Length: 147
Image (cartoon, rainbow, N blue to C red; front, top):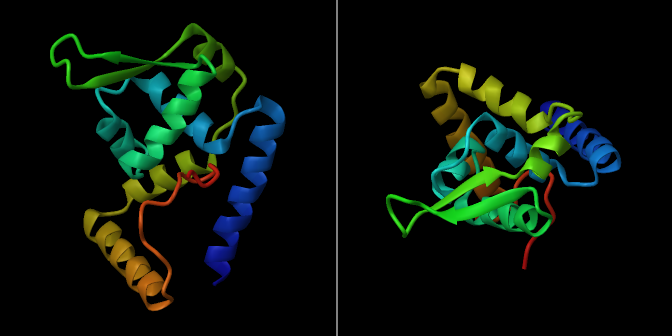
């Protein structure tokens, strides 16, 4: 349980610091940082890169589009696909951005052998299922519940 409490504490501290400094959520900053590395070919691409569900990242992207930090455009090669990229305002916001706890957690997870990642995911899912915690697509770390 100490490890779980440490993750929760780190998320709470990082969330508060980012919201105060930047005026956006931790999840929004994480998505912006992923898009700064490279634009996303689709919501599914971005969901994979952020290690979250497509519906959760969709809510974050919508909020970033509304604030003028991200663009959503139809793909020139496949009109069914949406490409997601940063606006100049989004790039400017990132100039003084701190690292996010998600970036650290995802990077550390990706350093683990795939078999360890799968084992960890299986054990966590079994733990949550046994505790009767809903495994439906939760919001991204650092983002409020969406309706």
